[in-house]
Length: 354
Image 1 (spheres, rainbow, N blue to C red):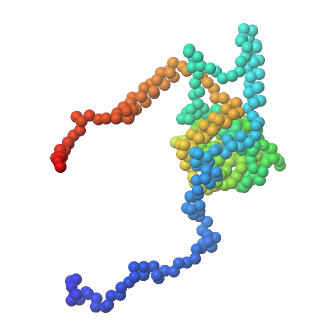
Image 2: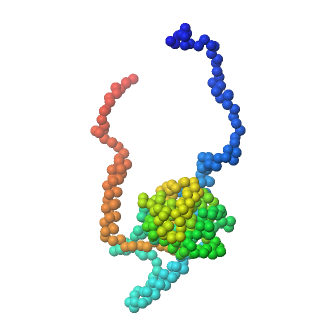
Image 3: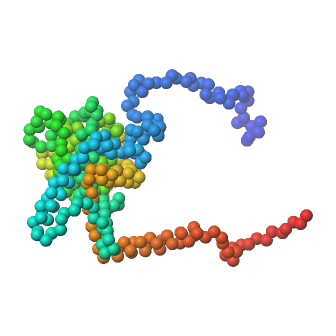
């Protein structure tokens, strides 16, 4: 076996083939258009756009891009909370003047002293639910107020006339009058309080809203903002919370909405997002701090509370724990030399004298 005289050996002459002979039999076909193939799937090259294009179109995906609501809020100089702040100051002034021995009212932020330290308990890891919802509602207000003239695409799934949230008759001019900030805040607060959602879920809701506006080339309008916010809250609650709220639970909150309508809203919302529900930590932090910037520019200051003894002890314990955790790391970073006594396996190499 294996010799030239074996019965298994072939006596036919061997033809020497070219290295690229296999490729010669295939003819390169002209490029087919995507419409000719009948394929509607998005090609991977369409997703891999340049960095500049992604930064401009999809700020909900990139931490370096400016959020849409912050840019829209800076287009006009009006302040929504100015009248609210004046009314609150007048109300406090009237209450303080009722007492004869009360000191004159002096509005402003509280200042810390040697005996009392005021802290803002609203942090990126534990945001305040009430003020986060107010900031998110304010961002939605600016989206509707400063929308584009053409208004972008208008889908039927978000139209309140085709899919009303209540049995009450929808007025003919339902898409002509911009809602006030209080109306938006009450709608979002009702959803979050009834479903017992967290403040982090409100930030993720805003991320999904702006991602939908960027992907689908849409705008928040008076006739579609409620259903768009509802779809974003529905999706954010399932992604963020471990114990998600079911679609049938929202039907108990909104009495006149059916489960089939909620399912269809969720399905189309996901398709418009291209099933991109990932929210990186950098994007989450960017939206949180931009919401704080929005609140400061609209005089919506987060409440300051005095530092209690228990809170101070907890902060000290956390600080001591972190200090012990990273003490060895800092010590190793400061060490620039090592002793020869700790070296093991020393190998002697004979010197060569020339």
